[in-house]
Amino acid sequence: MSTSPGPINLFEFEALAKERLPKEEYDYIAGGATDELSVERNRRAFESWALRPRVLGNVSALDLSTTVLGTKVSLPVLLAPCGGHKKAHPEGEFATYRAAAACGTILAVSANASAPFEELAKAATGHLWLQLYSFRDREMTKSWLSRAKEAGYEALCITLDSQWPPKRERNIRNNYKQTRGVNYPKAGPGETPAPGGADPAATWKDLEWIKSQTDLPVVAKGIMTGEDVELCAQAGADAVIVSNHGGRHLDNTLATIEVLSEAVAAAKGGMEILLDGGVRRGADVVKALALGAKAVFIGRPLFWGLAVDGQQGVTRVLEILREEIEITMAKCGRPTVASIDSTVVVKAPPLRKSPFGNSRKVRFAC
Ligand code: FNR
Image (cartoon, rainbow, N blue to C red; front, side):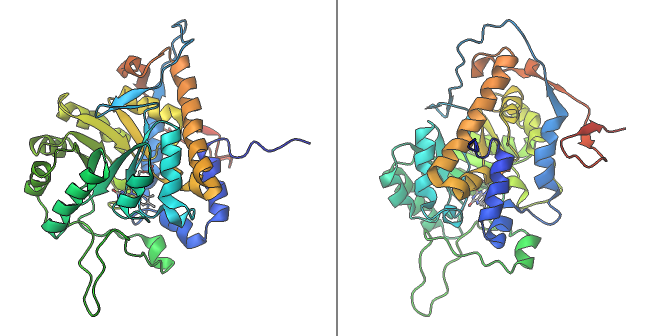
């Protein structure tokens, strides 16, 4: 009797997770803003770069390790800050950080995590970053900065693209009720809770102020233009995550991989540039590195891993990516992450889905 290998790629993980999650939770995780054009574009734009295979490069000993802000990771894939891992598995972020640690990578814990961030740090053994916003209440921001340091977080990820709430139509249709994160202060009897998210009035001065209030590295997340990369550098950011929030905030943007080169050029080598959005294959990771990213993050796939098999599921998601990165590096003749340069990729004509129904078959657009 043959046993099933289980999901063998991240798309199959998503399909299985979709079967297991309540519809409204799946929609919340998978969905994006308005027409979800940016969600699809993030994914499809990876097809616009082709790999250039190289042979006879002695790839007998591959090394996928690299550093991000000085921390060694065993592969160039980190786990993006995402709220509410308990939506996908009862152990939530506790399962995720164990998977991250087992795979030798970093988990960025979201401000909207389903567990208190200090409790998570206390239990964790691996490397954790804390994501937060420039909150309306500066004292709250200040207190999170020092509590994060005290708790052992190694970097702060400041999400900058969430100053205004998005329109997510799947959630509207499903009447989805998002619960307030456990890390935000509770309101006393009869009080209105203080708003938890990003301050719509925040400016670059606030990022500069955050940087001045902490000695942890500050990573600016949600940047999509060279102009904003330059402003991040001026505000003192140590790294930038090129991100459109997985297409969950503003629709109709370019894909993150399409703006990566602009961001890298604007950083002028002064800051590490990271990327998230639509990374689902090892080849995507190698393409992002070739175009100048130091490492990438995955968001939704961590939920698919959790929904399928908790900690083991997230571990498997990361291991699948590791295997696919290995294959890509070997076949492009690049034994180390440092050897992945711009000559690994070439801009390629866009592909579109075959009109004959089989989504795996593609043909050149005329
Ligand atoms: C997110 N993301 C996110 N980002 C952030 O800065 N703070 C947060 O609390 C959340 N929460 C969140 C919840 C869920 C369910 C998802 C799917 C995403 C965005 C996340 O960090 C990342 O930018 C995207 O998920 C990357 O795109 P992919 O990999 O999901 O395509």
